Length: 629
Image 1 (cartoon, rainbow, N blue to C red):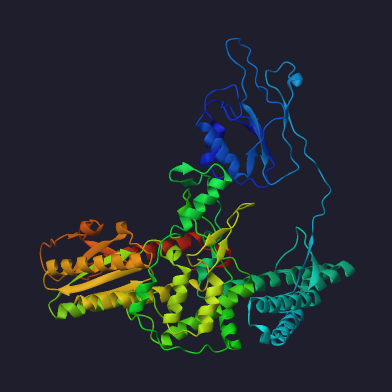
Image 2: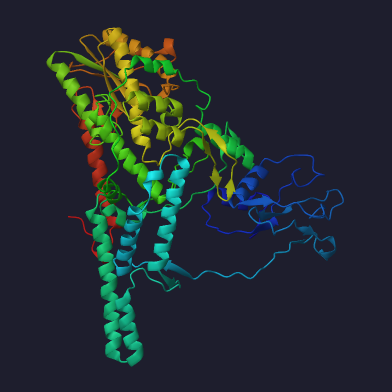
């Protein structure tokens, strides 16, 4: 790509502020009109605009090339002006075959610019235009599934006593699956005319026409193609509409998003201009709790729950896990991110690994329900629990208090970085307290403790980092492991408040928790909320957790008529802020007012529904008659 950027740096501003879709860029060169000591040793100054150029080049996976002969590229006609280096070349960082470029002074002729050259090696390459595939709903697919099931039944699970035995079984299973695939799949040529809806009936009708060259056979072929396409896409539409995702998945605006304009990743307000700085910024942002101390003695306040034996997995558990899988995703960005905290490391496992995690997670859900380990106020990451349950429970508590002529005060707080703060060794101790079979605690001890993490950014890979905290987002085990950790915490905080004779209710949804206190006087409620907040702050520090003070909110519910001016809640003595109640409060998707009229809630979501319906009418597929009734 050849670039010319004038003295106003118009090209750089365009790249920075406009979405560019340039892939597989090998070389970017041109006149950038930037003098800088980075590439011109005779120039003593550093230009801030060069940062933007380096960032843009990095977004294309390019690096600055150093010429073999470091001489000026532009020669001034005026003797008062010095010569300069403003013609630059950036090369693809993933190639070891592109060497440094050269500047040719003897090729200038009548120009005052020296040409830049580089040798690009061109090698013969064979592009694979075929792939192995199994046609859906075919006899080969049935045979493949049957053979895979047979191989699973034939696995020797008696050697699963250690990690090496598990790896041997997995390698054997992978070998059988690969052989079965090669046996039942067939090689398909990929061309620019390949269509996903094409089937064997289309092949037959096409061959019939090519043999006879009759007009009637041509019409039969055209009709066959039309019917096949309609049947294929009608089935696809029905599959989407009949499942829980609804007709919205038919719209392009929920599919994969395009990448937006580029921006440098910043850490502590400084751009990460080299790869080592990026790895450190990512690691320190995602694992801020690596060196946080955890006080395991806090678990002594909870007695061991009755141990439940861990039964072998059944076929039905795996079938249910596969049935509930969603094979649709909508990756992409909806805004420009320039902070490492805006990104999240996700768990990357193969399909079998994800399936096993899902089955284990489902089993853990039922075990903790069986031994009543989950705290009654816990409504997150569990089956048959939702944000609606939390808001309905809160509404019920408020109305029950009004029957007794009591006002309700609530204090909402958020546990900062709850996902990445969870300590692995602490989690294993919690599993033992919860009454799980020793084999479960041993599994998670091997699975979590001593982990290492690598970061991937485009084609770059970091070195290994030691990880002793966080549960991976994207893992099927993350929700239930978080629920287990938080449940133990709620049991302990409940005991502490009871010992202090503070009769306060707690609601918890993931890392969003709520203190609820009822009294005729708001000042008494504030005193109890203050004491409870102080207790939970100290207890969280023993768990290696902290409260995100900026998200702490107070709200009061009352049926008093006329002007309402409740007292503020001063949390500054314990590191918080002075909190004042607002006219409305949004909690877990519901908009509350102090009298529970829900007028603002209804207005907000009614307008949202009407706007959505209008958008659907505009974006509806008129060709396929996607109408709203």
